[in-house]
Length: 121
Image 1 (cartoon, rainbow, N blue to C red):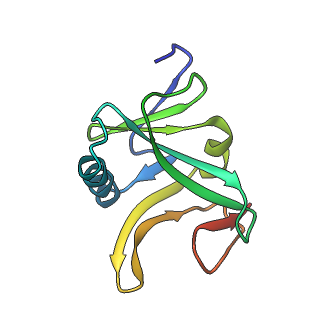
Image 2 (cartoon, rainbow, N blue to C red):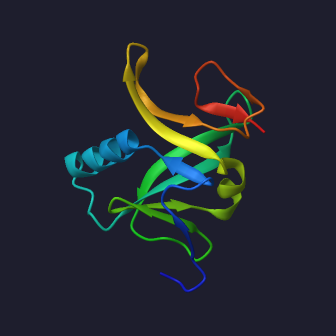
């Protein structure tokens, strides 16, 4: 990793990933044979019915301008632009009656859509 990489403690006021979400991420990685040295990339991109959508994926390494969160043996990469929109966000995993999936509880979202995967800032 680059010396320019900003390291952020795993559970902060910046971005929090719940224990339930970490367990599910690790399960998905194992089930899909994703190497343990890969990290989860969380981001925001333009689109969706409210203006922005959340993105999740796996990446083999961080980029020089990424913020890197390390917790429970899992690395999470967040690009600088996305980090601005995700500050204060909690990423959780739900498996309730209304479905399974990752949930972003984002205090920066001024509006959200019915699907829950799109927001406006």
